[in-house]
Each structure stands twice: as structure tokens, then as C-alpha cells.
Length: 256
Image 1 (cartoon, rainbow, N blue to C red):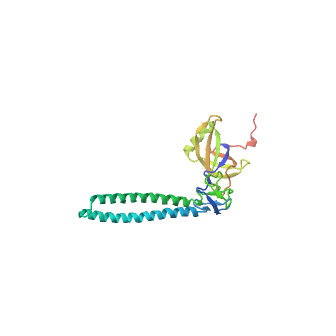
Image 2 (cartoon, rainbow, N blue to C red):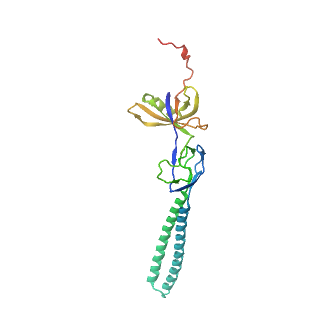
Image 3 (cartoon, one colour):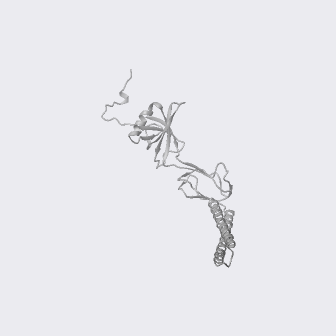
């Protein structure tokens, strides 16, 4: 079966800043292949670092108070057991220790939150792929609300091709997929030269009532990146092979 398909990236991400600040440096080139976790850019993090240091110091201050309160509690409990101190004083001190322990949990949450915000100042690649044309230059102030983001990363391999077939072919396509992978070729504009070889990944779960067609997506390794997102390609599905049959050249066939 032959069809015309559109090449679609399996993953495409608009990289946006998650904190506001001045863009200090850009560490990628337009059109560069990047790996997940690669550092793409850095935002001025001095104010975020100061906030992190502040909550870290507050946690240390409250930790010192908690340690002192625990020592006082031990003393009050020993005095109460020896009848040299009141039980009420020991109970009050125990409540104070519990309050300071809860405060430490709050402080830890604030430290974790400040650390996350500080980490956001380093923008990393969320997926493997190729960067497009960047939208912001170093020195500009960027925000999370910027509509275009910093750059778009598009996964190039493997890559998908989306195409449609008439609903009359649905039965034979499903039968072929039940037997095994359906070999699929992406062909050049002459509809003869193979560009890339892959297989059908998924058949849509409903027929388009308006067009009477079913959508199908094939996956191609695209290691050499011969097909590009947004490109139109001819697609040929090999559903079955008939063996030991008689064939004649099409030029020898006359109709009448």
C-alpha cells in the first residue's frame, strides 16, 4: 500500500526559563545536537543564592535552639523523676521541643524549595535532540511567561511519519500487524528511491468519519537524519509477500 505522510518528531520541547533573571551565558549553538541534561544556558543566580543562604542559616539557627531545648528537657525530666522539679515544667519543655522539631521540618522544606529555584538558574536540555534557532540572546532578561521560550529542541531519531489510508484497507493492515511488524519504507519524491526503512508503530483507534480514512504512524530509526520534521514523504507498506507467482512487466500489459 502507498500513501503520503508527514514527518513528525516523537518529542519536541520548548525550553523555557522557570525563574526570572538576566541571561548570563548561552552554552549551545543553533542546530546543535544535545543530550538530556546538557547545560544550555545560565541565568544570573545571585539573588537566588542569597535566598538559599538565608533559609539555610535560619535552619541552622533553629537547629541550635532545638539542641538546647532537648538538653533542657533531659534536665527537667531528671529533676521531675527525683521530685526536685515539677512535672508540668518537663511537659512544657517537651512541647517546646516538639514545636522546634516541627519548625525544623518547615525549614527543611524552605531549604529544598530555595535549592530548586537556585537549580532553575541553570537551564538544561530536557530531552535528546537538536536545537533550533534560539529566540533570546545573552544579556536579555528572560521570564517563565515568555511565549517563545529560549529554544525548541526536537528529537530527530527515532522519528515518526503520520499518514492515512482508506478505511477499506483497515482489515488487511490489522491482519498484517497481527502476523508481525509491518515493514514500511519512506520513499523519495520519485516514489521509487528508498530514503529510510522502519515499521508501523500504531494504528489509530477510530476511523475519521469525514474522510473515511484511518491514521497510522510508522517509526524510522533516522540515524543518518535523512528525513526531517514537517517534511512530506511517500510511504510504502509491505503487508505480505506472494511467493511462486507469475509476473509480467507492466509495459507488456494492454487494456481493452
